[in-house]
Image 1 (cartoon, helix red, strand yellow):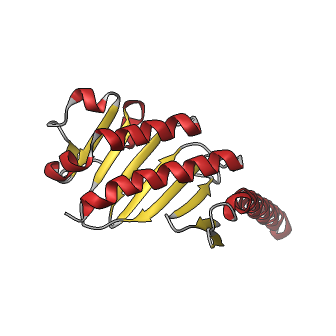
Image 2: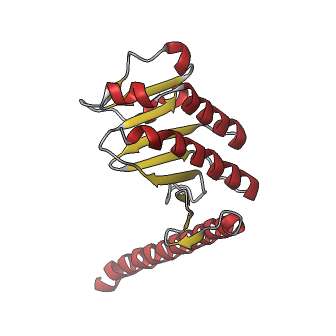
Image 3: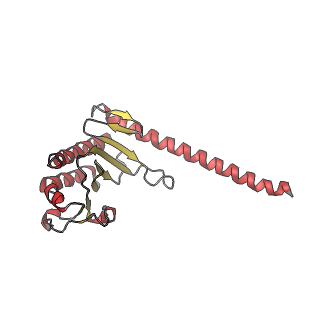
Length: 197
């Protein structure tokens, strides 16, 4: 009887171990694919690969992610991160992605912005005055241009001393990654002079 009870337990342990090994192999494959994509543009961007894997450049850090892992081991997100000054919180997302906007009791939509200026964007912030200063036509034009160049919808978040620009698309070609880096660099340049005020 004891043997009959041990066999299912051993079988379950064997299956669990095999599943963990498969997940580890898939993670390694995804990381290798991310590293390969980033290495293709490292020289052109004068960047270096860092742990993550990610690509560190003078403008910021680009990383590729499988955001739904382990359920889906597909690279489906590209993120550009750069340091930010100040303690303000700001989120700019397209209306179709409004569920991704940062919201809390202190972070709310900014009603005083010109609706014609926003045209399809939702802006939330912890400081309405800061949002009115930052959310300008050149910034939104730079975001729209970036969306067009990478054929995706970007989300801009400024929180905790960092700027993050996220696109829910795993950019795969060197041209897409170069366009993403260049467009994100422009957005960050437009944000930084205002942050110092």
